[in-house]
Image (cartoon, rainbow, N blue to C red; front, side, top):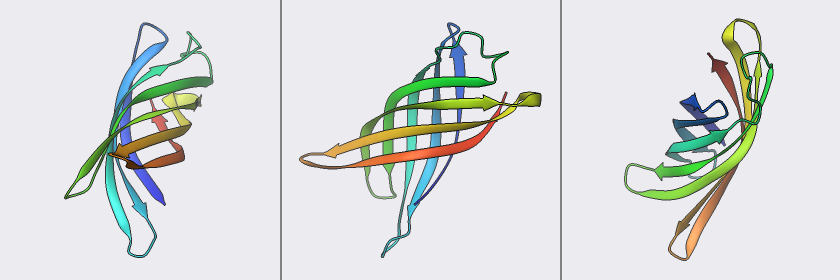
Length: 120
């Protein structure tokens, strides 16, 4: 499975934030399948001074839309992770997300561990 995405987060009230992302998931199965993901989330950062700290843990939750060219499914997402800031406003982000989707009596769950680049 490959998951690529781009997103952003806006901090407010010192510890809270909101953000969103848009991405793509591709599975290497037979036949291969690919679908898009879009989400809107709220974040909580327990450290109130993220500007001077290099480690910035967080928890997140929100809504997710999984879609293909023909259909879509709405679900939730929740998880957490950390930002590790380096010099010059660059860093890395590692997080875990659980995204349950329900389609009537059926459904599926995506559980992912992701890593990406950060820019301030």
